[in-house]
Every structure is written in structure tokens, then in C-alpha cells.
Image (cartoon, rainbow, N blue to C red):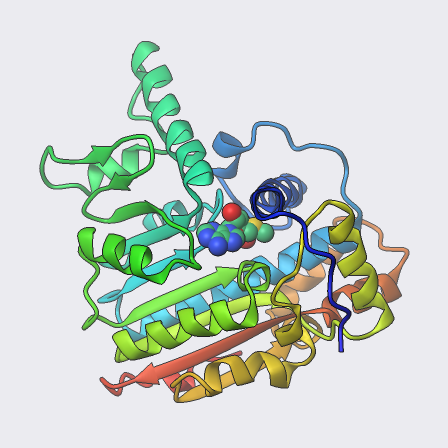
Length: 336
Ligand SMILES: C[S@@+](CC[C@H](N)C(=O)[O-])C[C@H]1O[C@@H](n2cnc3c(N)ncnc32)[C@H](O)[C@@H]1O
């Protein structure tokens, strides 16, 4: 069993969790600036590429982004975009803008995060609009797709909420299910539509009980749904212990680490909460199943001295995906 962690008070703990949003987007910004993948929009949320990140970190993020995108794009294809996407703990993620550019937009794309993170995200979207308006340039890059895909003038763009026809950003604590449900309803989520929920390094910050309640509520509410969860696995060994200690030093509790012991414990969270079919792969496996031509390309970008370190890193993260398919769309066939 992974060791229990000393308890930081809840405000400090939540603040440390919110800070992980910057870590993720700074690392993604750095790796994309190195050419691991293209992200045209992260620059508007994270100005600096920041200090150099080790090649194994960049390759780890490459596997994470490509792996999650592979499953997300497969879901959009299976449902022919007649679906919704809900990105839980989205932070400064830019997937909405990628989907718009690639012309594979769902009917509506929702994001959820803590109010403080959502306010920052909305501020960036608004600030760019304002600055560009002042400079009398063409439509701004972040708000342009929002405006273009919105049919009337009732676009809501205020401090803690953004709602347009296609894109909605909601402030909510994922541990408070009734508020989450109310807000998703208020912004017109349709439980009958096939719906993809995704969480990238998010559930691990909630207790096993809290994340299980969340995924059970989704399974009970959305008859045709998929959940993609990317996070830590194999946390019981020495390397996992060091990862936990590093985060503890920043007051960041991995409250849900008990479900990160193995691929089986990751799958169990979904199997015990009403999902029909569940799969999980560690990132070593995912990395080896990505298009190898592109993997060869990124492996030429930077010399990697510490091959073992990359392997250890990839063995300690996984993607777990679960499906419920009332409409028989063939969602269980989605995989690598
Ligand atoms: C490691 S960051 C990942 C951000 C984004 N998913 C990505 O991969 O770029 C974790 C995110 O989850 C959010 N988060 C964690 N626990 C949450 C909760 N209980 N309610 C809402 N958001 C939460 C944090 O605020 C943060 O933005």
C-alpha cells in the first residue's frame, strides 16, 4: 500500500492542487515549443516557455497528449461529432481550439475547474479580445472560434462563467456533485447525447470515495458515455513513493493515491460504479502503440541519455477508459 500522507489544511491543500494547473501547462508549452506536437493556443495562456525541461519529461507529456487525443478523436469519429465533451479539471487546456481548427467539434464542449482557475482562463480569453480590438486587428485567436460558432448575441462571458453555443467553462468543485450537476444543467448539458468525460491528472487529487461518486453519477446519468482518465499508476514502489514525497513537499496531497496502485485498481473504480467495459494501459504500452513514425520524429528532437528514467516515468502513469453504450455506437471498440 502507498503510505498515507500528512494532512495539509483544506485551503492550503486545494491551493497546491490548483498550482498543478500551471505545472501541466508550462510543461506542455515547453514541449510543444520544442516541436513535440503543435499547440497554437497555449502561448495565449502561458506566455513564457519557462526553464528547460528534461527530454524524458517532454516525451512523457508527448505520450500523454497523443494518447488522450487518440481516444478523444476516436470517440468523436464514432459519434460523428453528434456528442458532448466534458473536460473535468481542464485547467488551461486548449483542446477546444484544436477541435475547432480540425473541424471535429462536438455539439458542445464543456470545461470544469475551480473558480480561481476558471476566472484566469476567462480573463485570458477576454484580455486577448480586448487587446486585439484596441489594435484594430482581425478577430482574436481565443475568442474568434467562440464568436464564430455562436448564433445570437447572448454569449455569456463573465468572471466565473463562460457560455456560448459550442463552448462552456464552468466553475465548480468536482467533489461537490450537486453544484456540478446544477451548473451542467443550467448550461444545457443533454444526458441523452453520447458524452465523453475526460480527466488528465485530476481524480488523484480527490479521495477514492469522492472520485468513485463522481464516476458513478456520470454512469447513472449518461446512458451513452465514455470516460478517459490519465493519471498515476504503480505508486506502491520506490519510484512511486518518491513521486508522492515530491508532491507532499509542496503541500500537495495525492488523496486518491490508493486507486493508483495498479491498472486493476484503476479499472476497479469504474467496474464498481456501473460502467460496462473498462480498459487500462500504462504509458509504456501506450507510447509503443502510438504511430511509430511520429515517435521516431520526436525521438530525434532531443538526445535522451536516461532511457531508464523515461521507462520508469512511463510505467508510473496510465490511461484508463470506460464505456457505457446504450445507443450501440460501437464505443467498446475504441482503443489503441
Ligand atoms: C494537473 S492539473 C491538469 C490540468 C489539465 N487537465 C491538463 O492536463 O493540462 C489538475 C487540474 O485539476 C483541477 N482540479 C483538481 N481537483 C479539482 C476539483 N476538486 N474541482 C475542480 N477542479 C479540480 C485543478 O485546479 C487543475 O487545474
